[in-house]
Amino acid sequence: MKKKLLVIGAVAAGTSAAAKARRQDPEMEIKVYAEGEYISYGGCGLPYFVGGRIDKKEKLLARSIEEFAQQGIEVKALTRAINIDTEQGKVSFLNLSSGHCFEEAYDNLVIATGARPYKPDLPGVDLKGIFNLRTINDGLNIKNYLHQYQPRRAIIIGGGYIGLEMVENLMQYGCQIILLERGRQIIPNMDEDMAGIVQQYLESKGVEVHTDEIIREFGGTQLVSELHSNKGRTPVEFVLMSVGVQPNSEIAAQAGIELGINQAIRINDRMETNIQGIYSAGDCAVVNHLLSGEEVYIPMGTTANKQGKVAGENAAGGNAVFKGVLGTGIARVMEMEIARTGFCEKECLRRGIEYISHTIKGRTAAHYCPASGDIWVKLIMEKNTRRLLGGQIVGYNGAGKRIDVLATAITTGATVDEIIEMDLAYSPPFSPVWDPVLVALNQF
Image (cartoon, rainbow, N blue to C red; front, side, top):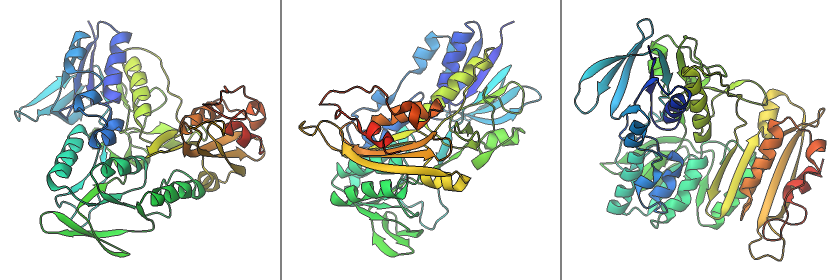
């Protein structure tokens, strides 16, 4: 008798799990339930959808319900999982359109419920004009508001990737931008010196950057009109909250599934939870850090897809593993590119790691090429072993993707001495004769 797999969630991890399970077991019955209206979409493209660089929401969709049906995978949208009965092997669902409740039995289950934006409990936070950007509907709502009300003063709360990417996209609407960060620096997962380069660039483009600023409340009648913080009052007509996410792990916890750091679902390298036959993947789950081996919560679209693939394969009888992540990330801030991987200095300090760091400034291409721009490369090496621990890049015109060279080296456990003479490609439009990565390595 063929087995039945249920998947809760249908964005990155859930759809990856279902697709891989089908390839692993062509006969398995697979059903996927999504709480949202849209499935299998590229959430990382949402800032550019808001800004109009992606002109249609359909371009964000990777696969449709009909395409999954052609693979023998049944996908139901607007259906919320409300309870998991691990003893009976059943999940209770609520159809959000009809209000009808029903149950589905399973042999194996993948929980890919994702995460939701963190919403601070502040007076006025529900005023119109205050948004998160997590789903396609969020993007549509923001676009509609911007067109209807044409705000001229916008505050982005949170200096991470999404907040930074939204700077240029809100500028498309003629907004004056204030970027507000409660910490000492923007881009919290980079070091202060590298983040400072980005801050100077933003300020040169007319963006106000406020750090060490803590919001107290929002003011307004129906529409948001001002923000109150520890530094005073600021008039505003649009607010984007981009202060992180929290995992949708409540349904798992209620079922007796163990949670880990940040209340995310604890899994092993096969994506198994503490309950046999139940797997988890994506932004609702923890992940292993490749350098330290510790459990971390670093929700990323790339990780969700990889974890989903492993969960789906194993839920269908396979034996795949996912070793972990380095927290590698990249973003664009107007013409500037930022990227990082591995540990930064403050992460080394927190772990008591003795390290040496060097930062160099170079050019992204030969100096005589029109496309050549500045690039800063910061590398961090473990003092005793000379193992490469981390890298950060800030620059222009192709600077950012150089981070992949560093991520590869760290993944393999390479020392600086082993990679210092890498045979990197050279042509004047792409790099100086000595690539900035090699120049940085030669500082050790």
